[in-house]
Image (cartoon, rainbow, N blue to C red):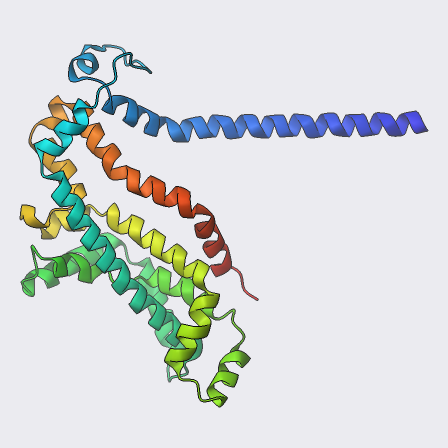
Length: 289
């Protein structure tokens, strides 16, 4: 009896070890698949123009890395100015979006007004409209308002997000309503209650929304290409396209990859620093009770 029990324990350990080994093997393979494009991008960016074009069969290594491609990326176009434009665009858009999102989520979560449920249902239905259709309408509006080639034209169409409002509204509703009623009895204003109670409690979700919006703004491509044809307002995405149009994209792929590495690095660092908060905020926003 005792030998059978020991044998069962050994079999369970073997099965558990086999499952763990299979799981880690699958995760390793998947990690390689996901990370390989980044490795290839960095590798290409440090290959010289001549060595890259001499490779009839692409090599997974280089024996003579160079930083010349990074110098070419910054001298081919004013990439530093595009970085500054992108930073201004990202900061202003994110700040305005947070202001609109927090106030809208608070109104839908705590304030009582006629037709609130109908308005919110209509609001959610906007998520079903493809962004491509909205881009056309926004372009016509911005053009009619003479806001092309301006930061206002770049920023205004991106200051509201139905998904972020919904996510934060669900998070606000997890805070007991009795706490809000008690605060009102004590004479606390809605603004003070929002600032002192709701925002601190829901900080993980707000941080998540902020980071996701920063990534969205930094990667923005279609809209900046539509409303800006003046280089003074180009973003980094425009810079990559300008490099390509100037011939670098066809003739000097390593220089183009160097520009992509430089542009991608801030987002990679941001995600590595805040990835836990992103996961925490998303999980909090999707949990009721």
